[in-house]
Length: 280
Image (tube, rainbow, N blue to C red; front, side, top):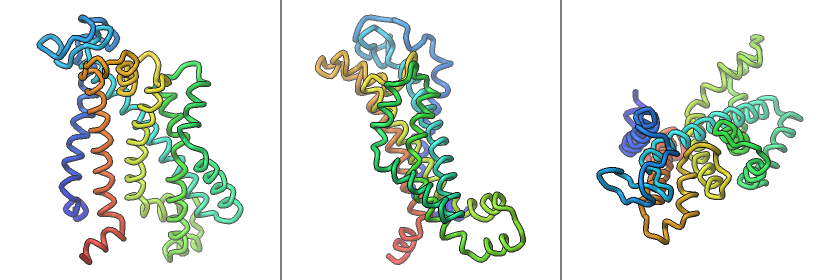
């Protein structure tokens, strides 16, 4: 309760914006009267009574594509966030707790992953895949986004393992798995939440970047896929602002709201920021 009281107002505003967009992605697709690929009107019809957000180059409703695109992008982001966070926690925890050769091997792998740009790996993976389902894309993005989380978790665990309560648990014969789950990870909960938020909006941006290059999910709509077709059919040059402006606005709103949520949590849980604020 004390933590909730100390959270800045921007946390609640940003959280409300994100939840509203997420609700549109959950409620919108079942409520839509047509699918994202159905041809419903004339090409590039502007927003009006028939189509609140207009139509694209094929006459598909931008509004219908939007709610399906939000759901797809959030699904990919959530799946990638879970995968990337879990892998990063596992690698960082074992490296920090075990130390020695295990630490050197795991951190060596982590450093190699960091030196190779993630977008290059994602491009190669996307090109090599026969089909790019949203689940496969989410797993691939999460599989290359864990190194920075692993490094941060490793440093925290290496510090926590020297504390008195961990020594007591170790001397009492507590198993390693229980020590990690009960004596170490609960102290990392605040950072794990922040790491997940970072992984979430990073994955949404990664999907958008891949989709812009024509390597997005196949057979479905996403915010990135909407931008890809908007650029491919030169809607920017033609002045059809609703085709590219709508997905751009929602990608910006999602990522910016998550960024504000993460920075708000960091301001509360980061000792340096918290102590500096108190001193000021």
